[in-house]
Length: 407
Image: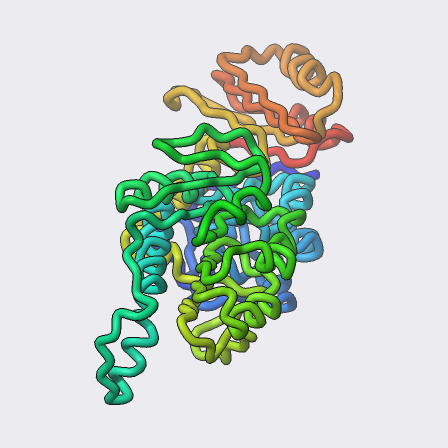
């Protein structure tokens, strides 16, 4: 295990998938060597590039596997410039001492506004009306067109997005039911359901806002669509793999489901211009969007600034506030002279060994911060004097040591 001791101007940052320019500007201004690409990287190219990268920034279409991390000896941190992190092998990242950050709140409002807009559009059949107008057909019929006021909305997943959607939907006069595996506080007049089945039988609009954990795969399929009421609407702006699109198509074609809006797909093109293939193409009153739930200029700018700021704080201060895989250490204002960060296996005796090494070399500790998270431990030590090379070597050689950095 080597010790990382490099100034910002020596650290190389690779940002993929058209991350907002504010992220590039913030990191460049801080002195990092930044390269930004407007596309995702495939497995082979990503593995090749990671061999020479210290920091990686991605969105949802770049998948970082354990094999890719194994080939990235210099990688210190990753930023997911989005909400989800299921495209990253977080266990492997932790095992290699790579901190991962995301933006759990930045695009919440943008997603919620799109959901509201799509519910209204589906209730009014606006996509079909627009298509007919472009074809020169004038049809003022109100048949099948409804207000959203009084409709019963079912929200599956009551996290940041689902709960904010609940509040806005009620303000439009909708009644809200929700289901979540966690015990979430109901906002406003929303009613909590004990199961998805209970929710489906109570509502006439269903919208999914679950996370990317593996056990959500195939969450919504034939049985769930069959349980929905005749003429219901269905929306998914969460993850593509949670829905059986074949079953959804069959229920739309039969008329059982009156309309749908889908923003995420099991297989999505890697870059603009690549062909999009889906069983849902060509269906009436179905809105298909290219994973743009959080793609507003406001959200992307906020995500760019937020994640870039978290990466910078980690690289310069060691702060892991809101990291998705390392122990979260929120540090006081930076008043240290010298700082050592030590990521290690969470086993007994590590901190005692570290402090014993310092004591043996007559080093005084001005501040120390320790956190654990599952199998991972993280300790930050501030001292008034620099760390002797033999102390660093001894710490690097500890069997429990994963990553050692001097800041």
